[in-house]
Amino acid sequence: MKPRKIKIQLRATGFITVLYLFLLAYTIAILVAWGFFLEKQNREFTQAQVTILRLRTTGPGAQASYQAGLRKILRQERLHTLQYFGEGGTFLLIILIGAAYVYGAVRHQIRLSRQQLNFMMAVTHELKSPISVIRLNMETLSLRNLGEEAKARLVDHTLSETQRLNQLCNNMLMASQLESRQYQLTRENLDMDALLEHCIRENRPLSSSHEFVAELTPGVLVRGDRFMLQLAFNNLMENAIKYSPGGTRILVKLTVLGHRAVIQVADQGFGIPDDEKRKIFNRFYRVGNENTRITRGTGLGLYLTRAIVKQHRGSISVMDNEPKGSIFEIIFPVVKPDLYG
Image (cartoon, rainbow, N blue to C red):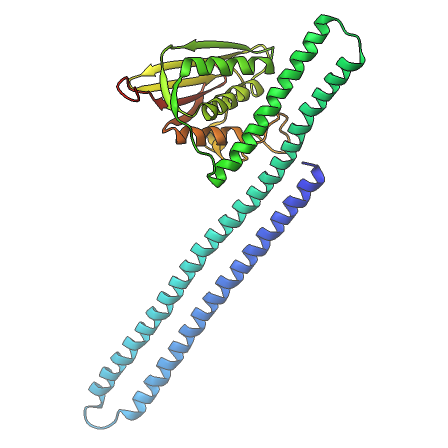
């Protein structure tokens, strides 16, 4: 996002916040003022009643009658005071709760709108970049007489960019279908060993500087949708490539723990701060500051991955890798031998 647009958004947000707090403070001040005004009227009314009682109480037994009337008047004053402050306190509490809810909702909407704007700009860049590279490579192949080795490098580069473009389109399409609940899962028994191997082969061309290491237990079956699970695993592997420096290792591990399949994708990258570990699975959320971030992405990958995992009755979590980096862990129930044939 351009610095000018960012400054305008920040100023607009600050103005709305100041205006909202001013109106809230004004409303509370009016409510408190009315409370003190009613209490003042209550005291004046009590004094008037006491004066009238004193003038009317004469003759034998006047003192006893006066004391009884005075107690009744003071009791009514206390009841009115409790009524005013009770009702005022209740209204004040309702106003504060409503104000906090509205303020939170408005802030959330502003933040979501800003994330959506950043998402649109990121998508535009993510689409334009591979298309430009593919076009340049194809023009180079068609206009120049290159050697076989140079042609092979250009073809490999073009294929990696098409894979990146395909992954982005799949994420956007699946996000739309999940939001509208249009996608219907096609469940089948899937060999996790073979599926993860396939995903590793697809992601290797995206970065020749990363070393993929597979530690996969064979024969682990999970019932699910092949396309959806492949999309989830590809997102984790692509994230590991983006957020870890070249020359580091990306470990893909599959083990069995009881009746559960445990899948881990571990990188040796920058890691994720503890206060952001829960936020990274939110839609459009990306680690870091929007103004200084240099890694590409749309903020949909982990959101989709969590949604897919939940649809398959699984769980996903992130933890720190040692000595540095992150480990994303997915747990699925395995297919029991006596089920589904």
